[in-house]
Amino acid sequence: MRRLPPRTFAAVATAGLLALAGCGTETGDPGGPAAAGDAARTIRAQKVMQLTRTHEETGMTLLEGPVFHPDGGLFLVDVTAPEGKPKVMRVDVRRKTVRTVHTDGRGAYTSAQFSPYDGRLYLTDYAHGEIVSLAPDGGDPRTFFSNDVDGARMNPDDIAFDQAGHLYVSDSRGLSEGAERGRVVRIDRDGEKASVLADDLAATNGISFDAAYRGLWISELTQNRISYLRLGADGDTSSRHTAIRVDGGIAQTDSIAVDADGNLYQGLHGRPALLVYDRHGEHLATVEVPARAEGLDSATNVAITPGGTKAYMTVSGPGGGYLYAFDALGKGTRQSNGG
Image 1 (cartoon, rainbow, N blue to C red):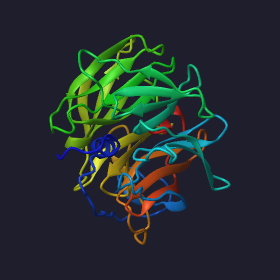
Image 2: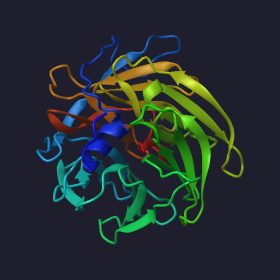
Image 3: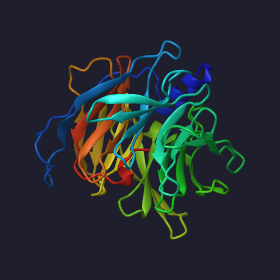
């Protein structure tokens, strides 16, 4: 891969953007939840609003990390936004308005999550191997973690918080070299201690706890698979296995969210769609944007309204960055904010 400017490289590496294009389709009834034994159905998402356009400085836009604040505001990031353009945004989905929360001249932020411990917004800076945090209004920026872990710098992509506020981070090390050196890293909520829970992964990307907080679902972008890490009482890995093999074609597995029923919502890079699986690996549904939506080639992530079923997914491509909505199969919880 040719050497790219830090912001563009971060976006390319984190999403696996290799000039992929195209959109697959599935057929099925657009009605209620699929009955046992039925083929996966198609859910048609509807456009809510456009949030960004392709940036001249970086040559792209890539929306990620949608997460609901307790007051109902939907926060998200633009991975490739240049200095002076919104890197963190807050959307009022009812009024269809957006405002800038944060921008700077350095970070390439690939995910956002609110901590249940201190209520701050945590961002992964893929390009610089750091995790930073902000006050919910975008002020008081802090570097939470920037150290090597087991002698190697992270390329942090997504975050999942446990109930105590400790961080579980997908580390996409090795992506640019095509090597399986990805990791899952646990960082204590005070940022003082970090440990590797799993390694030798294929560009770790999405990460989310299951509905019972007993294990972690992780997506491996360059192998199009979802693995499951069962956790012990101390938060360490007790077992690991490949759980779902995703038939993505030219698309690759991006971020993951989980609803209250334990269903997985797997984002795709290279196709503007989400794949929905139950916890046993059955493909329940495919969420698609309308065929007439041109210039969109990725649906990286999703957030489901806490306690409700209205879901909002980030969709991007040469045509810009958009928010699309659909009815999820289960209600939203903390794990329903993807990465």
